[in-house]
Length: 125
Image (tube, rainbow, N blue to C red; front, side):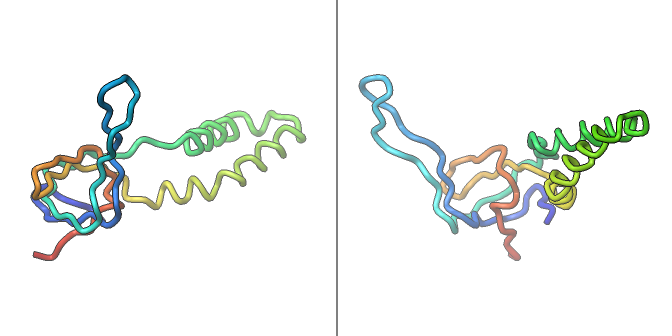
C-alpha cells in the first residue's frame, strides 16, 4: 500500500505514545496513547524506513561473499553461506515491504510523524 499526501487514513491498532512526567523527576503520572479507529489526513510521505540491524548484516555478509567468497577457505565460506541462509528470510521480508513513513494530522489535532504506514488503513472516501 502506498499512501499519498491528502489521503484519509484510519489508525489500525492502538498506538502507545509515551508517559507523562510531573513533580519529582521520573514520577510517571499518566500515559498517552491513540486508540485504533481514529481518523486523519496524511500530510507528508517521508520515504524509506531505516533498515534493521539484521538487514544491514545480511547486506554486509552478502557483499563479503560476493567479493571474496571465491578466495576464502572452504570452512569459512561454508560458515558464511550458513549465516546468509539464516538471514535470508529477514532480507526477503525487508525487500517485500513497502518502506515508507508518513506524517498524519488526526482529526483531534494531534500529529503523528514518522509513523510506519503498516499501522494505517486508507479510507475510501
